[in-house]
Structure formats: C-alpha cells, structure tokens
Image 1: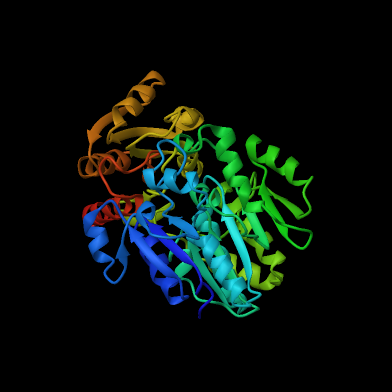
Image 2 (image 1 turned 90 degrees about the vertical axis):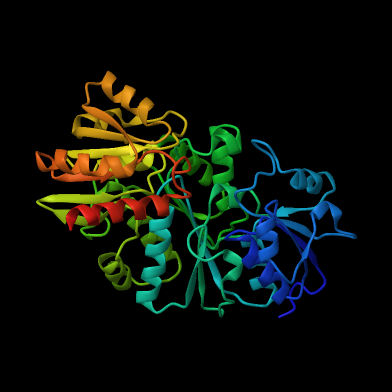
Length: 428
C-alpha cells in the first residue's frame, strides 16, 4: 500500500500514538523521520532515522505531533514552532488515517466522539452496538489503539474514533459522517487559552460536514447548548440529546450521564443505519469500561467503586449522582476550579479521605461546608480508613478523584488499578 509513497513525514513524540504512526506511514510508502526528546524512546525506534524535523534535509509534507505535545499553548515545542514558521502542517495521526483510507479508495464511514466527559464510554458503547449489528468496524484514537494503527476497512466498515481536543485542533481535511459532542466543562484551559478556545477545538469535530452527515450534540450544559444553536446554522442534520431525568436500565450504564452516553451512541448508530433492535440489545449487553464507576470489590456490605477516570469535578459529579450516601476518596492534581462545582453533592458525603498534591485544598473546601474529612495522603493509607467509615454507614467507598493523577501515578489507569488492588486486598 503506497498511498504516501511520494511524501515525507517527521514524527515527533514516540509514545502510544507516535511510534505506531511512524511504522504505519512507512508501511504506506512514506519516508519517515522520527524524534523524541527522550533518548531511550529514540533508541526504541530502531530502523528509523532519528533526526529533529528542523534538521531534516529537504521538504517535509507534515510534522505528526503526538497529542500531548503542545504546538501553541501553554509553551509550544521548539520543533512545532519551527514547523509553523516554515509552513509545514502540524497534524495528528487521525488526520493521516482519514487521508489513507480515502486515498486507498475505501468508502468506510467515520464516527467521531468528543466532549469533556463520557467520550470513552460512548466510543466503546457504539463499537459494541456495531458488533451486535454485525457491522465491520474498528475503534481507537484517544481510546485504545492509535488511529493510524487501525486496519483499512471495506466500504461498509465504520471507524469509531474518540477524539480529544488535542487531536481535533490538528485535523485539516477530516470529515466525520456522524459525530457527537457530549458536554463541555472547563478542562485543558492551559492548552487552549480559555473556555472559548477549548470549545472551538471541540467544535472541529463538526468541521466540513455536509447535508449527508449527522451532528449529535448534548444539551445538558450551557456551553453545549450554545454550540447546538451554532450547529443549526450548519448543513449537517442536527440531533440534540439529553440524559436529564433518564436511566438506561443497563447495569453497566448507571446515572443520567450514562443515559446521555447511551442516547449519543444510539443516535450515532441510527445515523449509520443500525436498526433499533440491535441498538437496544447493544445497550443492554454493554459490559462497561474499567475505571468508570466500576464496582471492583465487596466486603461486609461495602461496595468499592473505582471511578479513577474522573480527572475533573464534572466527571466526579456524574458518579456522585449515582449514590445517595458514600464515603469519598479524592485528590491529586486539581483542574481549574478544584471541587467548587461539587458543592451540591457535599451533603451526600459521609466522610472524605483526601490524597495527593491538592488533597489538602480539597479538605479545606469540605471543612468550610461542614463535611467530615481527613487528609490521608496516599491511596494505600486512605482505603482502609474509608472501608471502616463505610461499614458504619454509607456502604459505598467511591474513589472518584476529581483531579488528575500525575502527582502520584503515571495515568488514571494505573491509579485505578491500584485502587482495585487495594480494595480486593481489603475484601480478601
């Protein structure tokens, strides 16, 4: 497959997305140069010319920049600055997947999912529905396999791609046949400058859609409703969704937030031609995702809930809404606003055990509102304390950190796995 045989790419950042992108671009016939500021990562990319994009001799068609590396804010990588100054496009690998699929003649459709929260669940749920319906599909991008590592699908296939704001700000020709923007709350503001910049990046999921496309939009928050009004001026068919006052009835999809996720997946599936029976069966049989309101252990009437994916207050609120009373473990690296937006849920907290870098700030906020709390410092210290507190009353230990993990863990998955390990140890 020589779809990129005449092109030259520099891949910057050789992590989860970068190295697979380099390998696939070479498979597609491109000349590929790679660079990572970490020497060990460069050494792992044996077989490629390790050279900075700015030091490549001759013309480059694009710099493929890993999503986590900034090209504008808060501080652009020097090689990204060089690329923009020299008119070299800075792309995400999802853009090149789209170009490859179309360049190879496949008419496979693309479904895109974005939003501050719920992206991964909706992506996995739509893929599950397509599997039930017998539709050839491949899911990945921000969730699962890197976009450019996905297979080339036949004309009746569907790509289901979770798209972060970091990825969406680096697409230029990509058009989603069906796309959803679930919700918007403050997140990644350092990367996008302010809420307007963040919303603009998210809105890119609807870019270049025409009358044959479907734009699905959540309307349970004001910024999303504003985007829905804008969508009405665009050519795509608009479907508004809400989870308020609704429930799925599916064990793996509790709460209003998951009702919205299910509405989104169903709307996308309908746009892709899936029948109602397959949609209903897919929602009912969905097994759920790890680290999203996932029950990982029980002991003496206490349920341990792993919601490590809640890296901001809005995400934590969705898990909190599922329980009338709970013992809360939270903390880490707080996002803008900390836990201020969680005040309506404070009366449900029997006691909170705080951890991590901003745990003391969370504790101070809770104390202002009369919520019993204790700074435990680490998960290992917090969990047995939370278990004892939950035995005396609530019966639920909810680990929904409302903060990022990077002070104590490399990512939310490792953090969630540690909570599950400790919970199972207590349960044993």
